Each structure stands twice: as C-alpha cells, then as structure tokens.
Amino acid sequence: METSWYPTDDVLKSSNIYQMMLANDFESYKEFWKWSATEKESFWEQTIKNLQIQFYQPYTSLLDVSKGVERASWLKGSKLNIVDSCFQNSDESIALIFQTEGGSLEKVSQLALEKYVNQIANSFTEQGLTPGDRIAIDMPMTLEAVAIYLAGIKAGHPVVTIADSFSSNEIAIRLKITKPKLVFTQDFLKRAGKVLPLYEKVIKADAPRTVVIHEGQEKSSLRPNDLYFKEFLSVNDQFESVIQDPDETITVLFSSGTTGEPKAIPWTHSTPIKCASDGYYHHNIQKDDVVCWPTNLGWMMGPWLIFASLINKATVALYYGAPMGIEFGSFVQDAEVNMLGVVPSIVRQWKNTGTMEAFDWSKINCFSSTGEASNPEEMKYLMQLGNNKPIIEYCGGTEIGGGYVTSTIVQPNIASTFSTQALGGEFILLDENNKASNKGEMFLIPPIIGLSNSLLNRDHFKVYYEGIPTYMGKVLRKHGDELVKLENGYYKAQGRADDAMNLGGIKVSSIQIEEVINKLDFVKESAAIAVSPSDGGPSQLVLYIVGRASGFSEEEKLKGAKNIIRERLNPLFKVEKLVEIDQLPRTASGKVMRRTLRDLLKDP
Figure 1 (spheres, rainbow, N blue to C red):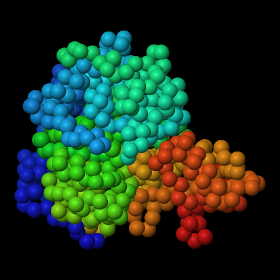
Figure 2: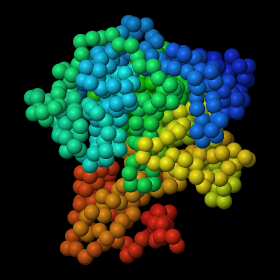
Figure 3: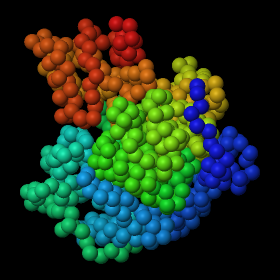
Figure 4: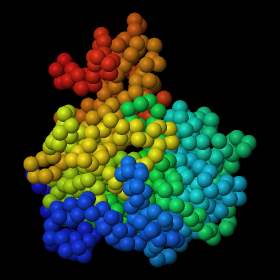
C-alpha cells in the first residue's frame, strides 16, 4: 500500500503526542501506545492534567474496578460539571464561528457563549425544571443547539439528542424511551433553498412541551402549552454549575444494534474526557484551532465536536447548510478551518463535481474521516484539497465516546487505513474459533474511559459481555466491527460482524429496516443487508424480499420500498437494489444467513 503522507520534523515535534512522549521518555510511538494501554491509570491521570479538567472535589481514585472491569468507575470520589472544562480559554477567544445559508461569517466569543448558556440554564429553572429532569433536542447543529446542549448539562438536565432527519415515528420511539420534560426544535429547516417543517414532525411524535426556535418567514401556530425560544429565554446571564458525581448522566444518545428498538446510551461526565483526549492526541487539536465537522447532535460526532473542541480551547465551526456546494467550501476557507471532519460519501461528491478545488484550504492541518468505509483514491483527493495534509481515519462508537482504532500525525499516513489502536485503550481480533487473529471480529479490552456502563432500555451486561470469550484471562467486550491487521501493523475496516449497518454515516439495525419493509402489501418477509462496494465507498442498502402475489412491477416495488424507508425511517437511507427471492436462507435456529445473501449478489 502506498504511503500518502509523512510527518515532517516540525509537525512531529509540535504535536501533542510528541510532547507526551517526551515527558515520559518514550522513543517510539509504539512504546507510547503500549504504555497507554497497559498503564491506563498513569496515562489517563496525565491526560486529565493535559486537558485541565476542572474538579470541585478531586478524585480519591482514578479507576475503581472493585465491581469488575465490566462496571469500571472513573474519577471516584470527585465532584464536577464537565461544562466548566469547556470554558477555560480567554473571554475574548472565539468559541464558535457559524454561517447561515446565504449569510456571512459570524463569530461568538467564549464570554458571549458562556453568558448565553447561563441564560438558557436559568430558563430551565424558571420553567419549573429541577436537576435530573431530561430535556430533548431535535434540531440542526446551530449556535442555539450547542448552547442549549451545554446549558442542559450545566443545569443538571440529561440531554436527549435526536437527529433532525428522523421521521415522526423514529422521534416518537426515542421520546417514549427517555420521557423528557421539555423538547427543543425549530419551526422549519432551511436546506438548499427549501423550507422543511420540523416542529410539525415533532408534534406528530406526540412530544411533550416544546420550545421552538423561529426560522420561517412567518411564525407557526403553536400548541397551547408550547412557546417560542425568545419567550423562553431568561435575561439572567449568571449561573452556578450544578455539581455532580462523575457517573451522573449528561446525555442520552441512540445507537441501533441487532434488535428493532435503538439502544439508549447514557454518557456521563467522564465520557467527554474520551472525546477531548482523541481530539488532543489523534486529531492534534491545539489552542485556538478552528474545528469543523458537518454533523448533528443526534449522532455522537455532534457532542464529540463540542467537547473535543472546547475542552481543548479550540473553536467550533458550524455551517448551517449542506456541506456540498461552493458556499461550504468558502466557509471552510474564510473561517480558516484547521481540522475538517468528513463522511466519505461527501468526499465522493466533491471529487465528482470538483466543487472544492477553487478554494484555499491551506490552513487545514489535518482531515478526519468516520461513519463509513472510505475509498483510497477519494481520500488521496481529499488530502490534496488541503495541499497534501493527512487524514485521521477514525472509527469508534456511541457507547465508546470516541474511537477505538484511528491514526495519528506522528506516523506515516496511508489512505483508508488506521495506523493505531486508540491511545488509552486496547482491543483484540478473534477469528470464528475465538482465536487471536490478524483478521476477525474486534473485541475491546476494558476498562477504557468513555465506555458505557448502562443502557436505559436494555441489560447492558447481556448486550456487551454475556457469552463473550476471554483472552489470556482478560474480560472482553463485544462491539461488532470486523477488522484486518495488515503486514505493516496498520488496520483496515471490514464492516459489521452483526446485523447492524452504517448508512449515510448513521448506524441502523437490519431489523429496523425490515420491520418497515414488511408493512408493504407485496412483501411477505424481507432481509436488509449493507454491501460495501469493491472500490471501498460507503455501504449500499440492498433489500431481499419474499413476495406476495401483486400486480406491481419491479420498478413500482423498488419505488414503494424507497418511499416507505424515507417516510418511516430516514431520507438519508437510500435503497440501492431490491431482489425478489423464493425463500430467505436461514440457519437451523432460524436466523437469516446474511453472509449468504451477500454472496448471492456476487454470484447470482
């Protein structure tokens, strides 16, 4: 495999990783990673100091595994609110840069953002909420969304995050699981000249009392108990953080596994330390850097962006439109973005259209790519948009709080490969016989800061630990990804080992898709699979159906499948192909053999 980028001496010596290696007398990165994985307490203690995490009461022990590594407790005995660690730069530093579609660049200082957060935190109290009451956010990534998110955590309200692309049905499922007291949304979404209703979707989901940010030309007619954000917002811009134990929930995010209902995953005050650590080491975020990653609070990269940027005293850069056209390219240039995160399918469109080639992205120090398997040629193209800058391939999960396999700027960069296991953690690959292998399913070796310890709607131990083999006496934790370790020690993604799939950067279970497809009149039963193209691009959704007698043509059946997926699940999930089959291949226990279905596509 061809090396695409080598670190220069200047890049190497100015990196956060190099400074940490120097402080601990490590001569090679490999030695440093091994130490971080085997001497976790030393690594995380130094990392917490590097990040200057703020405590009201210091921890008595960094790591407590008295209940087993499956239930590891971090920062035991401490009291904190992680939002306080997000406001450590100077008052006049720029905390957030944003631009609306057709608008101009706007900058928000740290002091202005902090006061805005405090106003919102006071508003919760004025509306009768008490610490522990949940709030929900279903809106795009905007200044208001970031401020509401931070204010909820600061005031002791766990924040339920829901992607604005979800259908009313999917919103309703998430609200039913979490039961928030208050929901925040916009009346409309503005996308590429279109005005799309959002408040209307939230109402159809039978949401509780809702606060609405006004974005339309005219104000919507609200339900009697709902109110507009301006009416909600307190004038009081002083607020003392609610101090909590590190294991208190700050956020509830959703991640689909292999069952129909999405897993509700709590993040605690210690999870953002993992986000910030990955930002500090692997993405080399420096003080006053500008970090841009088109995302949403409903996907873990939304909260990750906030914590990885602000805890590292960097600036969050938000463009309110789709990251496809020339206005986004101009935003990256004019905001002087230093770290740009992408989903590979976005890069594919940039390459096909050449849209971003007109802009000066030379301020970018590195890119990052996550959410889908990437294509080497497209990644090399991306590197050249920043005048040959490295790409930090980054793969993890909502229940991890960050990445488990990634890259660094202190190692040679090879497009579409991961150069290292993430610092502070470790995993092992096991083959089908549960033997250590260079190719197989990935199992985490706990404890690792950021790993979830509970689920709201599932037995956490059963999901991640029950029936999982041990390795050399060590407890292993299931995740579900498959990897191959290359001869040079780097890694390459091989997709999912279970029935979950990544579509458009969003993880979804096959069962969720099948439940929707089975509602179609012409479908007796179905099986959904994700297929990775041979060129390594984003996964494609293929549907196998056992049909009922109907007068529908193949074209009409495909159109029906596309429509119901868009309406009931997510318009970002694109059906690539619909294949009719006499019966689904199953194991003796009745489980659908999805690998066989993938093979049928290769050899019809």
